[in-house]
Image (cartoon, rainbow, N blue to C red; front, side):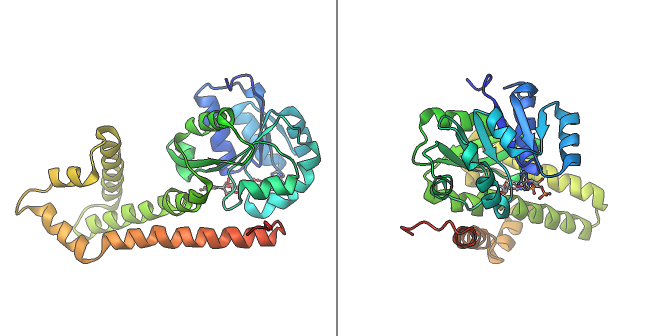
Length: 283
Ligand SMILES: NC(=O)c1ccc[n+]([C@@H]2O[C@H](COP(=O)([O-])OP(=O)(O)OC[C@H]3O[C@@H](n4cnc5c(N)ncnc54)[C@H](OP(=O)(O)O)[C@@H]3O)[C@@H](O)[C@H]2O)c1
């Protein structure tokens, strides 16, 4: 389905490269079907050398080439990019936006056209093909457009389709989530070091523990509490550690972290829309 479609990545930073690289590694398309743009020539040289895709600093050329346009610039660059390309956008083109905090309605309003738009919130493990992404459909997007976006994002990890009002929650959980888990890995490592392990070994053990535990949840589909109970021997080491974690409030702390990040995402979204002067009338 996707194979013959031409895809333009507008902005080829961390995410743009992760997505185009994911498609090529999964052999879902050929480099000739992809064009990548950026404002920096040297960045495009790197991407061309590594992946063999077409590159250009000219966003007009990329839009003319593509069936699918993937917006991968920072939110601050959005209004400049959309002003630049909106006249080039053809009715048949699917627009996929990975830009945090910008709604499909806002993009539709900005371009003044009824193109199908799919909004995606990926996360940084996309660079190692282990992203946890949420996506939602804009007003003019249909099942086929969802399938195309699922395929592109599916090449770099797991994807969940959701109503747009839940995209800020996706940001608060999986978008920001890698930072929470890095802190957990760092703290477990420090615990190991405090109790005598060399730091490099403690880091490897902590990292593998997080990875292996996540994999077990994913592969067994067991409730995490069941898996926790399975490793908790009566009167043993783990139950005492769990008491410490409960007394220190690990669970409410993580719940509040997701709540706070979600609320901040909502706030930033409103700010970005006002800043870009693309506030929706009905808001
Ligand atoms: N990184 C994450 O974890 C993550 C997670 C979820 C969603 N996102 C979203 O993904 C988007 C991209 O994030 P990122 O981390 O990949 O950012 P990034 O590394 O800064 O990539 C954006 C790229 O776009 C380039 N650019 C700027 N203006 C442009 C223009 N007019 N035309 C073409 N290219 C242009 C930038 O060049 P300069 O650097 O020279 O400006 C940069 O190379 C953001 O909107 C972010 O909200 C990121």
